[in-house]
Length: 159
Image 1 (cartoon, rainbow, N blue to C red):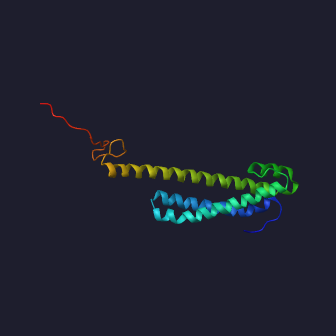
Image 2: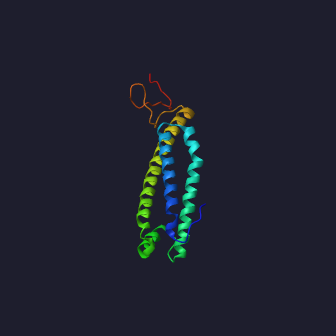
Image 3: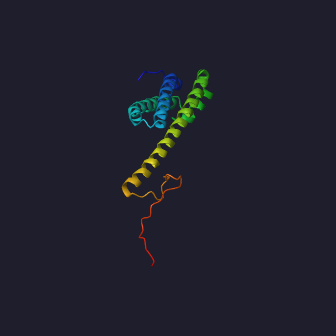
């Protein structure tokens, strides 16, 4: 990892690069999720993990710099440091941009999680049908457009 000075703002440029890289990976993941490209999704897993680890490492460095400056080593303390430090004034815009980029990445991640959950539900429904031969209580429709159901009970003939 690149070495930085002693200011908590010193890592912001690298944090911007890292969050942008992660955001691009999340956008690509979303494209793969929408197109059901399982291989593409799997190929992104390691890259996403590396990007997230780099971001965590950079945030940890910033937290340590905040602690060394006498602030709580946390995200909320960065704003307090920016307000109290005359040399930090130029970093305010960069910090705000980083927060906004993180919000975009967070929303992409949330949407991707929703897409994954929807696919898991569909997969589970298909598995239930394949394993049990039962489409009852599933979201499967028959050729007539109605929910298909299969009776699993006994049939009695009254005569």
